[in-house]
Structure formats: structure tokens, C-alpha cells
Length: 225
Image 1 (tube, one colour):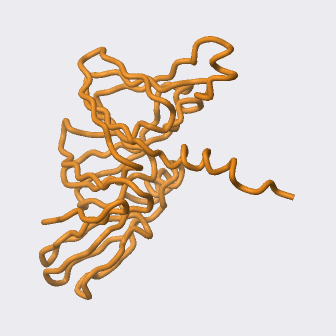
Image 2 (cartoon, one colour):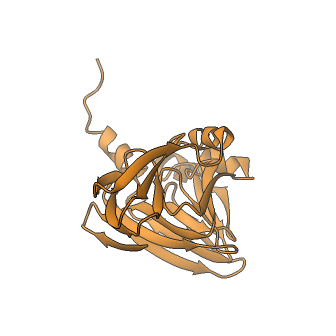
């Protein structure tokens, strides 16, 4: 499969498929395609995994697009930011925020990832449930805003405000820590908890999480009557 990522600030990835190749995507991700692409719907792993995706905030069923002849299909982002391509293989699994999956080759497996630290799920902002991408193949991830990457050494940590973690290597761990001091909690404007990512592994941060944008816009919305 060949591909090109084009456009800012709302990018699109155009995948060029050979006859017989096909892609998986969440519903609503397809932007345009050649007539040779045949659409189908699948639970991709059975009804159990379908309910797991629903539980994690994803769509229950995935769309499949099979090339009946050589052709192209485009998948568009839903928010200003970037589309990133990652190559998944055994030993190179990644953990991503929910709703960031855009499209992938069928050999990439997406499963629900339960954060073992319950406090992280309740207060960490990234959610108790994330997605783990494993198997082998290419996946396209949409990220809010621009991206900043850090390679963390074993035991090295980075403290991140809630919502800014886009993805991390499966070798990293995620916990939370309380913002110190009552005054900081009440008047600091940074919430009560921060997310702590510990290496080894790469962590990718996003500069404009949609949750932060939504919080900023609330103050400009008219009060309900």
C-alpha cells in the first residue's frame, strides 16, 4: 500500500490500494474513493470486541473498503491537527487515546486497554480505557493540534496536563499525581491531578486536545434558560 498525507490544518490521508487490498476504518472517516472500492461492515473480531470498542468510546462496527481494482481511498481527520502513520509489529505496540484511530491495514489489531491504575482512569484525563494497537501493519492516527515527541529513558518521567497525551509506546506506564498545595488546586486553573508518563519508550503529546478547546468555549456559550 502506498499513501500520501496532504492538507492543513485538516489533513487527509490518501491510500493507493492494489487490487485485493483493503482497509479498516471507523464510521465516518472515509472522505472520497474511486468507484472500484467496495464497502462492507464488520465487527472485526466478533461481537465481544465490538462491545469492547463501544465501551471505550469507539464505534462498535468497522467499515471495510476492498479494492476490486487498483484505486485510491481517502480518510479525513475530524479536528484540526495531524495525521500520523505508524508501523505496528510484535514488540512495537502502542497505546493511543480513544477516538484517535483513523484507518489501518486489516492485520493491525485494536483492543481495549484497561489502565491498571484506577486513579489514572478517574482523574488522569486520558481515560481508564484506552486502545492498544498490536499485530503487524500500518495504522493512521489523528492527533489534535501539532505533536511533540519525547524518548523517555527507563524510569524517566514527564508530567503532562490532562488530555495532552496522544499516544505512547506500550513499554511506558501512566499514573497520576495530585497537584501540590490547596491554593494551587483551587486557584491554579490546572485541575486537581496531572498525568505522569514513565519510560522507557516514546510519548507523543498533542498541543490542542479537543477537550481543552471545548472547556475554553464553554465560557462563551450563552447560559441555558
